[in-house]
Length: 258
Image 1 (cartoon, rainbow, N blue to C red):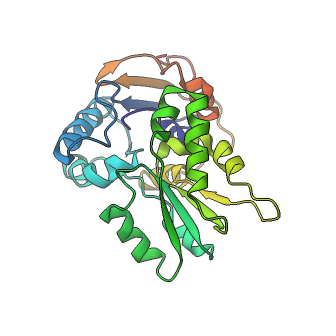
Image 2: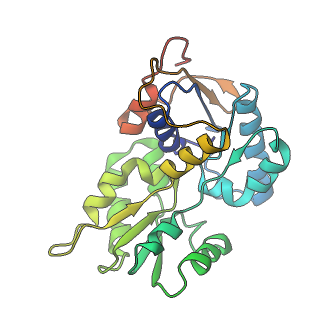
C-alpha cells in the first residue's frame, strides 16, 4: 500500500523473491499526495487504503511508503496485528552508516529534518557526517512519469549533495523507481560511484520472513496481480510500465486484474 506508485519498488522486490506470489496493490489516487496532509488525516487515508487491501485476505501488509510508515504505522499495527503482519518502510540509514564515510539522505521536504528521520540518524549514524537533502517535486514527477521534471529534480538534489559522499539513502519509495537517473546525476569524475541504499529489497525479505516463507528460485507459475485505486478495483496506472519495476509487476499470471 502507498498513496501512489511508490509501492511498485516493494512489489517488484516481492515478485523477484516469489514469482508465484499473488500481489494486491492498494493506492490512493483520490487522496494523494499524503505528505502535505495533517497527520490524523493521513492516518485515516492510510487505514482506508489498508482496509481495501485486507479485504483480499493477504498474508502480509507492506506499508510501502515512508510518510505513511512515519505517521500511520502504529495505527495500522493496532488495527491489524497480530492476525496480519504489517511491515513498514524505514529509510536505509543503518546500512548506509555501516558502509562508513559521509552519506546523504534524499527525502521529501516533509520527511527531511523530521524527528523520525533525525532519530534514525542519531541512532544508527552517530559520528558519521550525514547530509539531509530535501527533494521538492521529485516524487510528484515520478508519479506523473514526467521525465523532464524528474531530471530537473534529481539534478537539483544532486547539486545539494556534498561531492564527497560515499552513499545516498533513497528516503522515499518513489525515488527507487529512478535510481539509475540518481546514480548518473551523482557521478563524480575521478571518484568511485556513489552507492544507493533503498528499502524495497529489505522490506520484501522481511515480509516473507514474517509469514514464514522463503525465496523461490524456481517457481512454476507467476502469481496474479490485483489493483485497488482509492478502494475501487481498477487498472495498473498507465505510467507504471515506464519503470522497470512496473513492467516486472505487470507480468502477472492468469486471473490478474489489469
